[in-house]
Length: 193
Length: 193
Image (tube, rainbow over all chains, first blue to last red; front, side):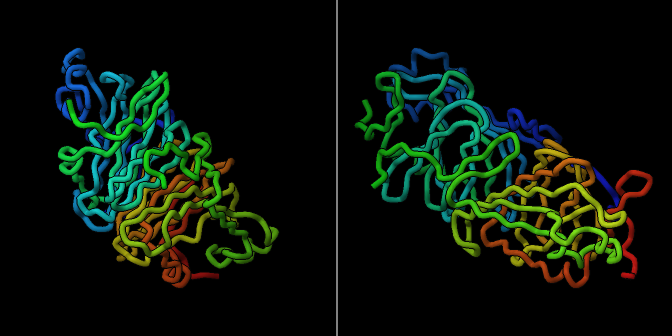
């Protein structure tokens, strides 16, 4: 019985890097071979060891995924790197319950939050320490690291948002974030070589 | 048309104190006279200037309150102080859409997150820099500053959560956070003097 008790939450953050600590925390790792198909230049993929870490995610899901009204909290770390001229990035997804929003905030490093609406307009917001990003419903989102250190981003999203990776896996975004003259730009998607 | 544009989000955080900056940010201030009735010792209230700031909140509501699937983001600052032996605290509320959850995380200072379920069991979680708190649906919540500096807490909640302040204003929590021998403890609510 917890009436009148003073206790601690089971999860803590390190405010410097937003890493999560505690029994309920779960971790996911994405290495290049898991997500090779998201990159344009498949010849360039072959030049990088397949076990190279592209990103990892820590999450606290206090209630089961799908629970209405609940929230989840997480931290994503995207490593620096490129496949050809395209920056290391996450798979990207719409939410399965497609009106569900999400907050991201930049903690360390430098990158871009790529956003695409249902009409396949693609744009990006600069991610940097302290940038705060609202991702509305019906907007696909993906993070790319455009710097030379880890890009770390905190996140909060509804427990019943879910992930629809399929649409992005099949049709991709309508633009790619590539380095041209040392700078990131969005280039309209080309036919895959 | 934002297709292929790279832009900035309209709101930024200062990661040191989670203060928000940007045109859409709104602020609320609660001074003692606004919330005097939440404290037990009404004689002690009279000893403190009525315009004394008890807490202030900055929020970004990217979509209108009530929008299903949306999220809001904010930072609460509770000042150090006591009314008699009772710590400065927020009004406290259930969510109007009562199954809606909320995340809080401690940024600076020292305090308690007071929690009360629908059966009027009251408990608390220690708030400190890096503490991360999941407040499930149907749980009333209130922050109290038990330290000597500002208590700063970040928050993320569903746009359609709403605030039900009425129940707490009428019935209060079933326990009060008071200082006894220099330490915070939860004491069963007494009959109001």
